[in-house]
Length: 182
Image (cartoon, rainbow, N blue to C red):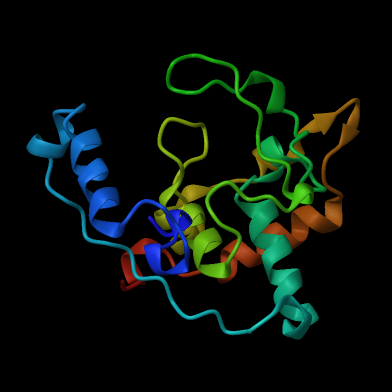
């Protein structure tokens, strides 16, 4: 519970009380007793200490991943939460839910590289935000064709022909699942 901090830093709830609360909340769902605890994902050390030090080529690769994984369909091309499907999203209880607006900078589950990595790889249960763990490892199987990227918004294509060619060449360069190792 890193958002709660610790008592030494002036937080009122001591660590043991926080873990007691976690154990109590787990009693609300039988899943905690019946399902095995999954292995924790390994969160690597970020390769760059700050965004200012990230090379432009890495930013460009991140842009390609954002587009390839169709983050734009919910979050929009500029990350403002205004993608073509943004008005159709519902949570697990069928309540309408808005995609996150990245331009606010106020990330719900932490804004450190490790926090974003975790959210990206595990998804957010109860929301339309899926896990991309297997998808990012094997994009050739996840995206067999370019039809999803031919989406039009307000009569205009979401991506140019050049973008579509970039997507195709990126996927063709990725190994298929059968030859990849984890």
